[in-house]
Length: 244
Ligand SMILES: [Mg+2]
Ligand SMILES: [Zn+2]
Image (cartoon, rainbow, N blue to C red; front, side, top):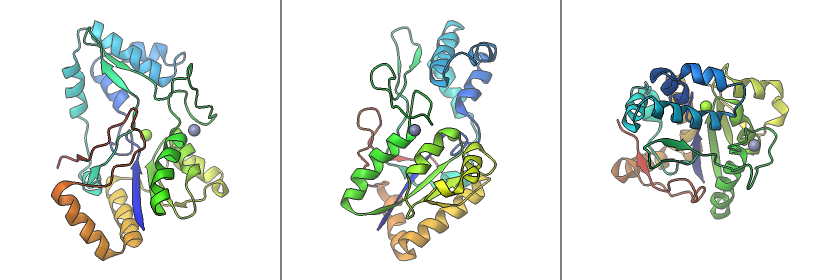
């Protein structure tokens, strides 16, 4: 029996929203506010990046802004390493502009899920992760998130799985509104310390302490976990150590 832990990023791994942070720090807030009512989030951020480029902001400026985001040390220590990252694809074009594309392209293959924004259905993604992993041996999944977009994947979890919503955020509220719809066991957290404690208790319980210690020793050496073939099209299938 193994455990697969899946983290949302914005307002889960990091305290705040990285898109909002870069937009505000680099000075595109007024365009953001102007276009927010008329564009889906993903297209809006692509447009904001065009604006930043026209204001002379470079990829380095964006990267440096992202590096100033506070990362709670408890959350860093809760995550040993990532085996896979699933995100909206992005690239730097010939002019040096950061382009952000949707994960699901709605004109070509719409995901057809009414719960999720047009660019990404995380429910579809978690199904793609769960199926091949469980084909080998049934694993327990732990999903951590905060937002509305984390509700769909939470509904896909079974009664052997766990969802860890950030307390008082939209995912937690959606779960409370219809508790019967969620099959997974629910453990709430409100800060990095609680996240770390709750997650390590759960993993401890699921793996048994001896196996956990073995796993941690393996991890500290080479940060090797099994690669999850979930997002081979767009994601990275390498183990990425978390900087400490
Ligand atoms: Mg989030
Ligand atoms: Zn969905």
